[in-house]
Length: 282
Image 1 (cartoon, helix red, strand yellow):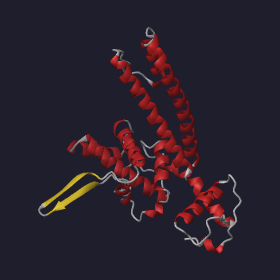
Image 2: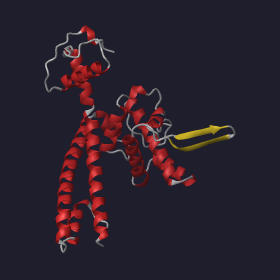
Image 3: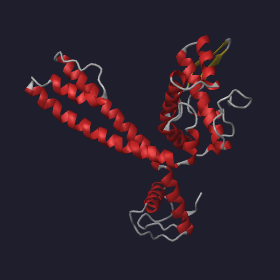
Image 4: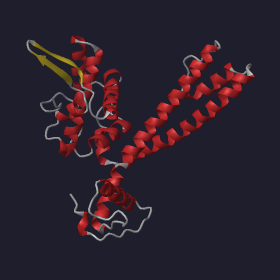
């Protein structure tokens, strides 16, 4: 913890990230009624400002991922709202691609001037959100390709640039976990345990932790299970699906991917395709 009372209490307000963080720290001190006077500013030394800037830069990928996902969700909301509104008038859009959605809507409402006037603003908003989503998507891909950790994680089958960057920002510091198997429990991919008297069984997964990381891991497991190249990891998931359900096998595969990615991150090793001892972390 920093003892802010030992520094001078003058701060030049600027637009630099470190200065902004320092102002937020000052606001936090005011809320907790720190002995520093609330009418003066706080000055931090240069080495503290430098650390703050570094920590702020590490959160840029997380902000880009969250903004990207928000734009994608809002685009889907607009499309679903238009589908439901046009369905009332007997106009069904059907299954179309993202690029053909607008063309299909305009074809349906071409003979209805009022519906055309209502849907055109929605289509303009959707078009603008797709353009903004593509900008953030390219930014996330560039951030992942520049990061050596993400490039190493992308050697795992099913793990792409978005999944690798999401896992990278979600874990942040791999030394937080003393064991790799704790990562799966941290992101809510382990079953809950119910034990009371003579009753003792495992329930559904806990779903605690970062939902975005958990979703990314499940998507990677889905791709690996259905479309990934053959490996000992996919073979293990297939055998598990034969004993139970496919969904359970995918969740278990997502948990194992979380464990393997953490071990690869800490050891600095590449993904091993063969079933040699120690190739797959348990």
